Length: 220
Image (cartoon, rainbow, N blue to C red; front, side, top):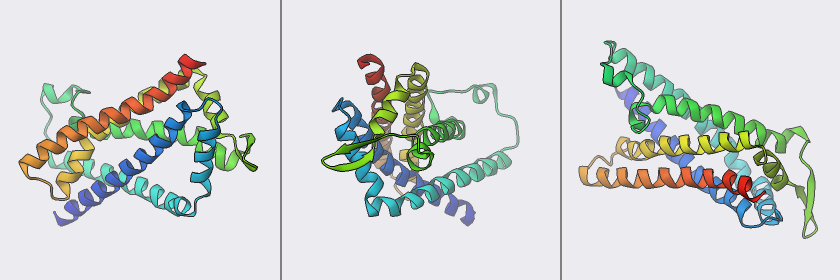
């Protein structure tokens, strides 16, 4: 039992850590819509790529993702073993409006989206050599803005990104308050507030990540 609680605690901590990263990531991505020249986003992306603190945090973030994924799968298997009897008909139906019933499915779909996202952006910027360069204030850097713009000009990728943003929002709308409950915020008054806050945060993430491809599709 203590091992199970420990895994849930660690999954909650890593989940909150990733939500914090997503806040920074979304803020950076919104720069795409502030300046059509791409200068602002390229400067922000260059800062993130060269800042020593961010470079140290990258492997920690990757480790957090791995721990969160492994532990969530482990806990899901434990829950399945603990309840071997068949679910009733109501439980068998996927209720996308109730993310708490489908966290593992939502998480798996988010993982697929993140893998596609990493391959199309992070891998190309870091390893492929396919990304062109630009010079801003005498500093040469990757033209990350052009990479993003070219991808979002393909409607299918824009739709995929919108779907991914919605999935992330749904996942967070339950995961946020659940994480706080696991680490001790189980008071009913606070829990009710955290659930409301989780819905707001999840909605803002879904809206923010969806707005970016919609902007490019409409603008260009």
